Amino acid sequence: MAENFLTAYWIKIFASLIVFVGLIALFIRQSRNQANADPQAVVKVLSQLGEDYTVLSNVVVPADRGMFDVGNVVVSPYGVFVITVKQTVGKIFGREGDSDWEVKSGRMNDFIPNPLWENRKHVNALEKLIGPVFFISIVVFPRAVLKGRFGSNVIRLNLLKQKVLQNKTSRLSVDRRDEILKTLRKR
Image (cartoon, rainbow, N blue to C red; front, side):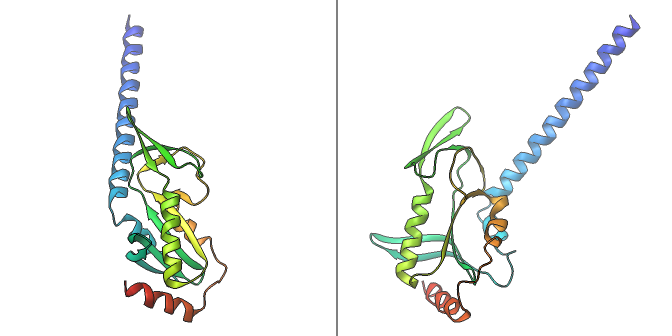
């Protein structure tokens, strides 16, 4: 009988430990999502890139039908990074060429327009404004889980710095960068 009591006791301890570890993991995940929900989270990451990179946020550029507010543009010797941020929460399903991507959050299903296409429109508008340069398109999902085949330019926030820094081929002179920055800062 004492043996059954000890077995039950250890089972309760083990179960309590599992629940405790699960609650800690949930708390850490929620804290991380709250930090990623900060609209400045992307800017904070980009500000860590170094002196070769100039970060401009909320750049307004003319488009065929109005204006675009391009969330983040990074001008560097390695090209002009055009970064679109999507604060969508849930699991994202889709493919690079699909017009819409599915979002599953709990029991809710929804669709969002393909943000790669939005990013492409931003690149096109910037190219009309500053001329042809080497553009690098990046779409960042700080709060979503990516479950599709989106291509290498659709990433989570934790990969943003690495994605930018992997481009190390010089493509823009100092004069050209200064010219681009002068044009974009007027906006």
